[in-house]
Image 1 (cartoon, rainbow, N blue to C red):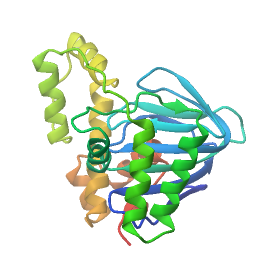
Image 2: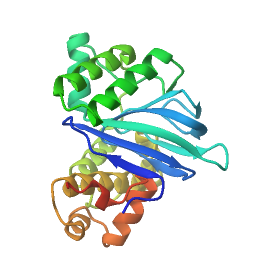
Image 3: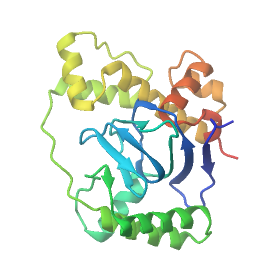
Image 4: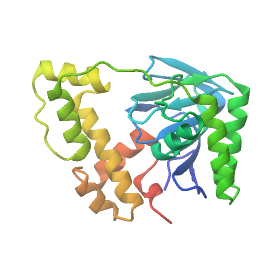
Length: 251
């Protein structure tokens, strides 16, 4: 059962997940494994992003990169209504390569007030959830990515030990990375935007989501991802995504 106000819309396009929401829920800091593109339809929210704190209001397009730490808090008691598409990195990067071969790509603006991009988002959302022709969604994605394509920024190199710890948690989010030293904690937080324990928890949530989508029973997915139990996994899901693990199961 989904939290009140949230609906997972069946998508006819492989690699695209669609969600609609009308809620006053405040999200904690979390990440996604996909590119996220959305549209605020009513109300407004404030959120942390990889580019600092931003505000989005009705009519604004919102974006988030895979692994980008963000949250979301409504600016009024009435909450806000929005639609989101979560798109696999492969789809987005393949589209970007078609448009500008060899270009490194990322979303550089977490909030955009652009009527053309908003219209392209609606077209892609409809193509993925209403239409049943794969080429319509493919064409819609190309149009949207073409409007969002920006050069990726170059991040400074980090200490090999910090990068290795992150890679260990990416590969095995249930593992103990042994990150207790204060200096290491600060370096890791600068790199990822989250302290080690919160980063590890996000990787567990993402791993569980993949397992549940693949058909693994909820209790088994919780255990395989390193959660204490299924209830712990469910609480973390709802806090991050506004969805329960059961909502992600294949129907």
